[in-house]
Amino acid sequence: MPKGYWVSVYRTISDPGKLAAYNALAGPAVRAAGGRTLVRGGRVAAHDEGIAERTVLVEFDSYEQAVAARESDAYQEALAALADGVERDFRIVEGID
Figure (tube, one colour):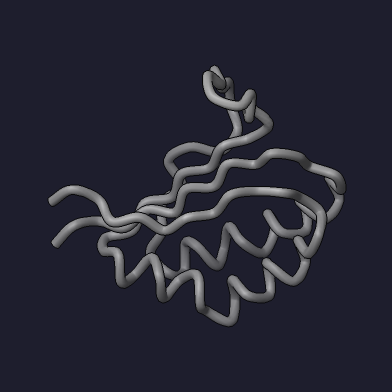
């Protein structure tokens, strides 16, 4: 069964406090749902459109698990804390088996 991944690319962070509140809630929610954060922040070499603020990659054992984690009450609480504090592109993608 192919793994599932959350891929987030942050264009802007307008409210670092909201991002910190989100991180405090999202980390435990992701771990409780079986997610493993592979990349969070760090150095980025942006080659297209200059988007290099922040990149996050989270791995799950399956695509279905990744979708369920995104829909969980715990993660929804984290999203509410984040609100309009960032502009990002968030995707759930299926890995290659």
